[in-house]
Structures are given as structure tokens and as C-alpha cells.
Length: 351
Image 1 (spheres, rainbow, N blue to C red):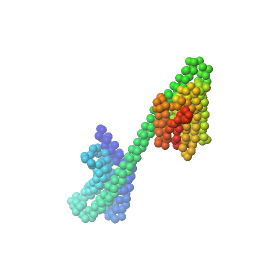
Image 2: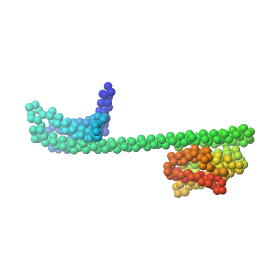
Image 3: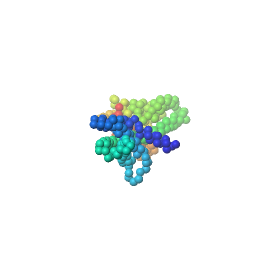
Image 4: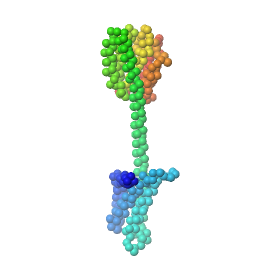
């Protein structure tokens, strides 16, 4: 039952409408050419043209699927081309044999019939194998395009999965730190706990809906950063000052989600928070020559190479920038004299 089903599926593929149309047009052109000088009935010419074309089509499809394994370096396309040529000759010869009357000599002994057979076979061999080669080339090109499309789709899925993994690492990082700060204020009975909670809600409303997006705009990032910095200023009002400077038109540019938040949060955790005197955080965004320049600097204690969070925070941000912009983006860390550190990002200015 399975073998019969495979045979039927193979026949459907062999006799598909596009293939039948191509074979039919070629046979029709051959029929029109020979009909100008054909002396026998035209129905016989039609059979001598369309029957070999159908046989060639079946041979092409047969050797496309069978045998599944070939010995040595023999390829399916060789069998297909040879099968088409052989099917044309055998089908035409069989038709001539069947059309030979009882007691009549074979067609190869009659000069007129032999001449028509040779002419039909010659034109069939001229068209059939070359059309088979053209079909094989088109089929190969289609397979290559499909393979490239699938590879591109798999690469895109891999990039999306990688970006989702990085976002999954970032999400709890910010939330847990903020909740820990709120818990400390509540334990101390601070009057700042209620405003901190209000700004935490504002921050989460701005941040949570965008955490799983593959790209966002700087204006959305600035909204989250503003809420976060106000939240941190309420927690340490005497030790944190900040300023945000955005050049006109830069807020519409794209960036990976949590880009600014990663930089600002690192500045708070590793620059401002550890120092007794706190410090100032400056956020600057500008655009020049089709490039977006983002800079976050602080006047805190500075970010040491061995500081915890350097690998998970800025490291994951580097990967997110690479996933979105490739080699066209760069993240650099430098000292901010006389103390503190500066992180700058340069990437394409995508509107």
C-alpha cells in the first residue's frame, strides 16, 4: 500500500501542470513544424509528437525519484537526461512498429518512413535533453534559494533567541536592585519610601511593556532613565545629581532595549552608590554624520575591572548592540578625570 502511494505521488509530481504545459508547448511547436510537409494523416503526426513527449516527461520524473541511492559518482541528473533521450526514441520506435501493417516490412526498411522517423527522433533528441537540462538548472537554483532562505530564517531565529536570553538576564537585574532599595527604606522607616514606591510604579510602567522588544527608541529609553534617576535621587537625595542632554531629533533613533538603563544603572551602582560623597551623572546623546553618540559619565568612585556587574551588565549590552548593529556599533569605557568613569556608545543613527 505504501509503495502504491509512493508511485501515485510520483506520478502526480511527474504530471504536474507546469511540466505538462512545458512539454505540451514543445510538442506543439514540433507538430506545427512537421505539419507543413507531412503526407500521412495529422492524427498520426500528433501521436508521433505528443506520445514521445509524454514518455520523456515520465522518464524525467521517474529518474528524479528512483533509485534513491546511486553507485559511485553517478548523479540523478545524468539518469534523467539519458532517460529522456531514451524514452523519446523508444516511444517513437514503438509507435512506428505498432503502426506497421500485417505482412508489411519494418519501418526501417521503408525509406520514407525511416526518413520521417529519423527526423522526428533527431528533433526530439535536440529538444528533450536540452529542456531537461534547463529544468534541472532551474530546479537547482530554486533549491539553492530555498536553502539560503531557510538558513537566513534559522540565523534570524538564533539571533532572536540570543536577544531574548540576554533580555532575560537583564530583566531581574534592574527589578531586584530597585526592590532591595525600597526594602531598605521601609526597614529604616524612611519618609522617602512612599515617593520611591510611586516612582517605582512609574518606572515599571515604562519599562516592563518594552522588555521583550527587539528594538526601541531613545525617547522610550529616556522615559525609563528619567523615572529611574528620580527614584535613585529619592533614595539618596544628598549624594546624587544628574542631567540629561539630548540633541534635537535624537530621541527618535533606535537602540536595543535597556541600553541607557544599563549604562545609568552601572553608573549608580558602581560609581555613585559606593562613594560617601556620591556624585553627578550626565547623559548626553547627539548625532553626527549618520552616527548616534551616547555617553553616560559620572563623578563617582569609578568602575574597576574586577567590579561585579561589569561582565553581566556592560557585557550583555555589547552583545545586544552586536545583535542589532553588527560591527557598526562600539562600546567604550574610559576614565572621567579627576574621578569617575565614562561609557560611550557609537552606532548607526537608525530612525
